Amino acid sequence: MSLSESPFSCLCLQFLFSLSSALLFPSYWFIDRLLSCAVFTSIERFHRPGLRFLCLLLGVPLFFLLFVLSLPLGFFGFLFWAPLQKLRRPFSYQNSVKTRDVPEKILEGDCSFIFISANLCLLPDGLARFSNLHHTQRRSLAISRLLCSSSEPSKNNCEDKVPMCSTEDVLPMIEIPYKTEGDTSAEGDVLFEVSAVFPQNADFVCLQEVFDGRASRKLRHCLGSTFPHILYDIGPSGPHGCGFRFFRSGLFLASRHPFTAVKYYFYPNARGEDALASKGLLCVKVYIGMTKQKQKIVGYINCTHLHAPESDAVIRCDQMSLLLQWVLDFQSQYSEDGDLVVFDILCGDLNFDNCSTDDSMEQKHQLFSVYKDPCRDCAGQDKRGTVGTLLRWDCLYHEAVNTPASLKRTLDSDAERRLYVAPPLPEGIDGSDAHWTGRRIDYILYRESDSLLSLAVNKFQFITQLAGLSDHVPVSMHFSVSLPGGASPVNNDTIIPH
Image (cartoon, helix red, strand yellow):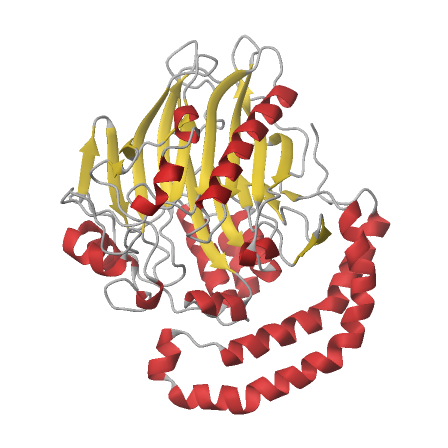
C-alpha cells in the first residue's frame, strides 16, 4: 500500500481546506487566549499575582472583543471547513524519504526494537491549563528537541533545522544528567528502570494528546530527519455521527520503518468531555525488511487513547472489546501469505491502572489474555520495579519533580513516590504490597501467538526527561526477536543494534 501524504484526493480540496483553516484560526486563537487569561496554573496563582490581576482585568475583555469581531470571518471559513471533513481521509502522512531507490533490507539473526509511548498533553494552551500545564507552544518545541536529540547517538540533520524555530520563546535548556545504572530492578528476564533520558535509536514513537496543530508541526519538523514516516492529524473532526468533534484523536506515530497499511477506527461510545475528541484506535502495518529467502518481514502497531473519566469503567471496557475486534479485522484484511510477523504491539494511554480497586473491571478484561503487559504480575498487582506514570496535577512544579534528575530520584523512592504520583482509586487504598506503584495508565503491550516469532522483552523504562513538560511519565520497551537464518543482520543499515 503506497500512502499519499495529503489526506485529500486532489490538490484543490487540500487548498480549500488550508484556506478554510486559515479563516478559522483567528477565532480559535482569540478564544484560546481568552481562556489562558482566565485559567491559571499553580505557579501563576502563587508566584505571579500581579500578572493574574492584569490578565483578568485587561486580557479577558480584550480577547473576548477580538473573538466576537473575528466571528464573521470564522463563520465563513466554517462553511467550507465542515463539509470538507467528510471528504478527508482520517489521517495525514509525512514521508521524508524523497527517493524510491532505497536498497532492499535483507535481515537475519537477532533484531532488536525500541518503542516509546508518551502522553504530552499538547492541548490548546487554555485547555492545557486545566491540567496545570501552560505555554503549549514552548512545551511542544522543548519536547520536540528532547525527543529529537535522544533519538540519535550523534548529531543529525534535525539540529540544522532547529534554529528555524528559534525565533519563538522556548523553555530554558534542561540539564540532563547521565543515566545511572544503580537504580534498577529486575523481575525475571525483564529489567525495569527509571531513566532520566529517552533511549537512543528508538524505532517507533507513539504520542497521545497532540491536539494542537502548531505543536504537531513542531514535532514533525524536528522528528522528520530521524523518523521518515509520521502519521498525524489522526481521526475525524467537525460533524461526525450524532455529534460534533472539536478535536481529532490526538494520536501521533513516528516510525523509522515504512507503513504498508493504515486504518483508523473511531470509538462510538464517548460521553462528557471525551465526546469533544474523536478518540479511537490507529492500526498500522509496518515493513521491516526481507529474509534471504525473500520472505517479507512485517510488524503490527496499534495505538489508542481510551475514555478518560474515572467513573466510566463500562465505557472503557466496551472500547477494549471493540479494540480487540478491530485489531482482528485489520490484520485479517491486510495480512499476506508468507508474511513473517515479528511483533504485534498495543500502546497508549488506557486511563486505568493495575492497582486501583475502582479499576478492577478493566484489569480483568479479555484484553490481557490476548496482549501481555510486561509490568504486570496479575490483575491488581504490578511487578516490583514498576512505577506510576500519572503525576499529581497540583504538584507538577515542585522541586521534587520539576527536573529529570529530581523526578528520577522521586520515582526511585517508595516514600517520595507516594507524595507526587497520582494515588490508586479510591484514594488511600494502596494494597498490601510495600512497594507503592501509584497510577500506571500508560502501557506498551505485546501479543504472543503461534503465528508470531518469539519476542523477548529485555528492558522496560520509565522516562523522566519530560519533567515539567507533561503530567505523564513516558515509557519505553526494548525487545528482541530472533529471525530464521544466520546470527547477525546482513545489512547494517536495516536494524540499528540497541
